[in-house]
Image 1 (cartoon, one colour):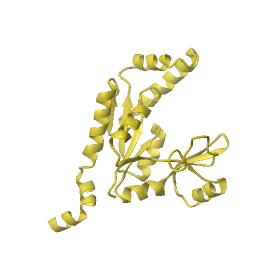
Image 2 (cartoon, rainbow, N blue to C red):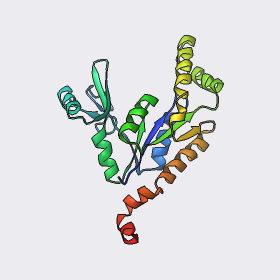
Image 3 (tube, rainbow, N blue to C red):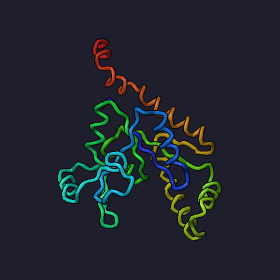
Length: 202
């Protein structure tokens, strides 16, 4: 495949969503994986940008055909990542970025072994606690649960290819961009993108 697949994971509060959004602004050749869902669109939702909105019947049929990389039922609605959509984008030479947790990353690697795993860490647990507290939206009990969950997630960092410490946002963004640029220069990717040139070199 000519495109690359990036799997980005991080504990809550590490800044993953902000970094991914800024990377996509910088790198238009990278597209964010868009999930399918059976939930009704909310005001402002755009089909194909926020989600692909489908019926429950269509979703179940796609499950039956084995089209999903992963899927789940949440509060009576189905959500899933289309393996076929990702493959189509990569075949067309587009890079795809998938925001997912470490468990989802394991599922992705089982199907796409060449997927590039990127884990984003806070500079310290103290800083993570400060960020979660600074939001001002959660009780101390909720924050304590989030921190415990984050620490458990961070123990899976060894399953990823790259680690970015998000101490300084601009530096972390540069690091994320550098990984994306370097991955496009790998031999197998260049061979797929420039097949005619490499054919003449054989």
